Length: 191
Image 1 (cartoon, rainbow, N blue to C red):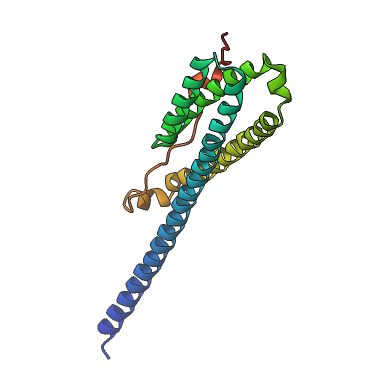
Image 2: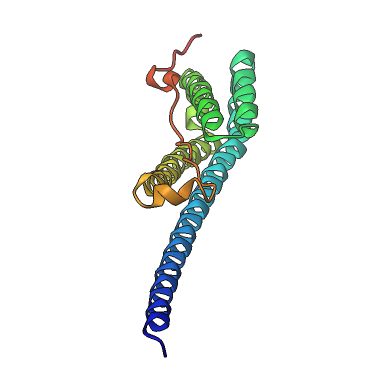
């Protein structure tokens, strides 16, 4: 065999090995980003799940309070409106804004309950209030988990060398579930 031909074959073999290694690296990177993207989708689905649980509890709480405070119509309407906005939210930003509005409306609703001693002692009201408090904790936990996986993913696609491939593969930064500016203000309760 000719020395020149043998050298060319060795160089070609090395080039093929380097290309194969680069291909395996890119495939591994792609699979890791897909897994993280799916973790975000799963975490967001869980956030929606607990928000739906919260929204499902609210009509029961409203009906219980309504029986004692029939003249507080405006509060009931604001709770129903806020609940509808939360159900129609399509993104984390919209859900965060709707969630803040619902939290404010619920705060007013629970403040009304303070004016009705018989309601505060009602077993159904106490049970619903406890369920709502537990659900609020679940919402906070799932929001935290969602934001954790978004942070992991966003960090991954911004780090070298993944940043070189992430856009090529179609991965973009994901949105955090952040409280809106209205969440920084204490809800005002008016009677």
